Amino acid sequence: MLSGPSGVGKGSVVKVLRGRHPDVWLSVSVTTRPPRPGETEGVEYFFVDQAEFDRMVAAGELLEHDAHMGASYGTPRLPVEERLDAGTPVLLEIDLHGARQVRAQMPDAQLVFLAPPTFDELARRLTGRGTEDAATIRSRLDRARIEMAAEDEFDVVVVNDDLEAAADRLVALMGVSPS
Ligand code: 5GP
Image (cartoon, rainbow, N blue to C red; front, side):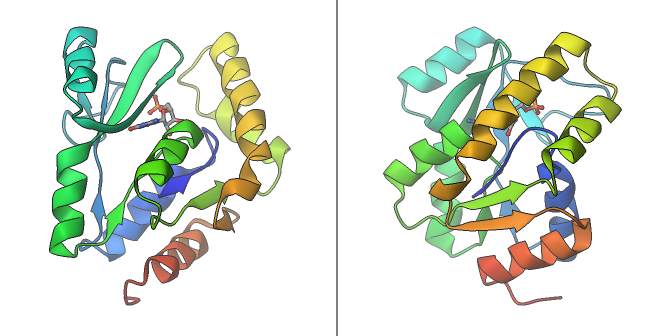
């Protein structure tokens, strides 16, 4: 499981990793937030309304779920279990609360924390993304501070100083043979 504060580059590292290792399966979460420009249904997320999300929670269809910035996010359980049963390497890109919930259910899962080189660098990346207003960025930074304080709960910390190197380290940790 790969976690880490918003804006640290989880998505970019995962993209590099999957480009080199299409055999690694990445869980696609469900969310109630609207798609951002360029996002495609079933690729970044499955976009659902709150009623459908609540139904999935009630039916036990989510391995974990959490709310951020007024939207709900969760990991569909069945696809993860099917891949694990088939022996496929599974990667969950998930926030701290989600990681804790999955760990409780899957004690053998490895938790990797992707950390920014420095907090200032993270603030720069979040501001530079240009997709959110100032209040949203402030709220993400507050959350990032809390998430970074939880680093010790993780099995491994990978510093995202270089995308390719971080992806290589993640691949090595997953036990996938290098490309
Ligand atoms: P974004 O809206 O920027 O794509 O994601 C916002 C936050 O939701 C990020 O911190 C991201 O890691 C988290 N997130 C994305 N998918 C899931 C999920 O399935 N479960 C949980 N708990 N958090 C998620």
